[in-house]
Image 1 (cartoon, rainbow, N blue to C red):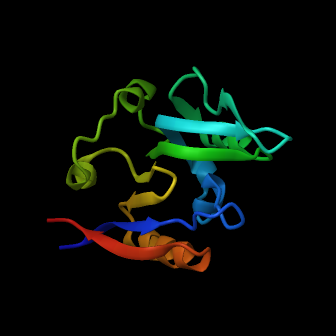
Image 2 (image 1 turned 135 degrees about the vertical axis):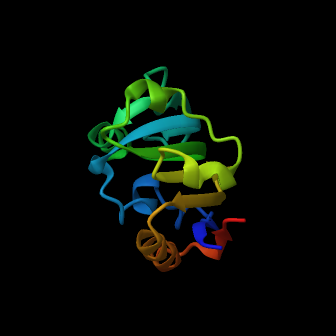
Amino acid sequence: MGHIGVRFRAPGDENTMVSILQLLEFVDIETYMWQVTNHEIYIIKDDGFVGTDGLFGDRSSVYSGKEIELELTGKKYYAISISLRGFPKHVDKNEIENFYLKDIFDFPQMSCELILNLVDNDYLFFLCKDETLLDVARNHFKNIGCYDITYITST
C-alpha cells in the first residue's frame, strides 16, 4: 500500500488564510496543463466585501500553468471550492476537458499527475503520483500552518 495523497485542513481565519498559489508553491505550475472544475471563488473588492464576480468565470476549463498564475496572482479572493488537476503537457486537451475522477482511489490509473481539491474553504486533499513530491507537499502544508494532515493510502 503506497501513499497517493494527503488530507488536511487550512488555517481559516482572515489573517492566516492561505492562497491557492501558496498551497501549490512547491509545484512548478508551468510544467502542467490544468483542468479547473467545481470552482466557487469570489474576488474580494477594495472595500473588503466579497463581490459577485468570480475567478475562472466562463472560460475554458483547461488552462496552462502560466494562465493559472495570471488568474490567481495579485488578487484577493475568497475560495469556497475548487478542484485543480495537473496533467503532463503532452496529454490531449480533449482528454483533459473530459477527465472525470469518480473515486480518489482510481487516481493512480489516470493520466492526471496532481490534484488539489478544496471544499468549504477548509477541507483539502492533495493527490500526487510522485511520492517524493508528496512528502515535500506534506511538509510544505505543515510549514504554512495547515493541520490535521494525514496520508491517503491506496487500497
